[in-house]
Image: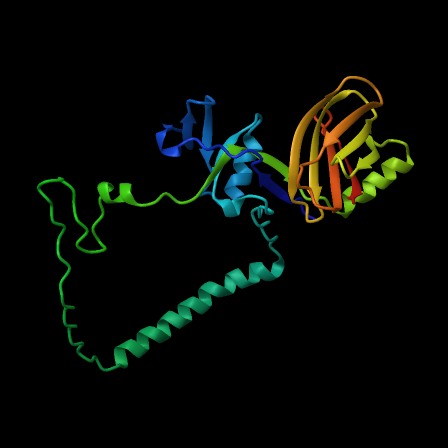
Length: 268
């Protein structure tokens, strides 16, 4: 099964996009002193290609329907076989035969004079300049003006720090069971406190980890960075106040080794 990459913005930025300074592939925000890349007009393949080159946390601007769904990677090119090679040889011959037949039909057909179409009424009027404002009025749909464009509403967009994550699949859960049986588990959920909305975790080794909480549909709910100081340290992980009862996944990734471990749990 192919890797499915999802993008999420946990804390949307509410700065004014139009007031930011123009920059390469986006705009520069003076508040957070970062370049915000404009992904809103990019395809999934272009987004994945751009993020593959990025080595540091990136802020982005997205259309709402680009987030929290699987991005579609570019299609894998089909390998050429002997049959596709033979077909490529036959296509020019078939095309030449068809063009010859069409030419013969055209020469023998009777030419019928075409009556010119009557112009539609009323005719489109040119743009008219108004003296008191110096702006152009829109007399027909072909007129384009920067002044008119400035009045058009900006399409909705979401800005913020990009969080890329993968969908929890069968391979992840099978690998977690195998690691648990072999005693190589990265962490263990010792207690689920449903009333307090807390998880008590025992982390095996010290290090810097990324904690991600996902629901059964692999939608990202929480993304946090946690530093563990000692072996088998107890960490209390707080859940959002409105977390509903149900089944969830907790995924922890080692920021250094890039290894990950997934554990499922049920919240009463």
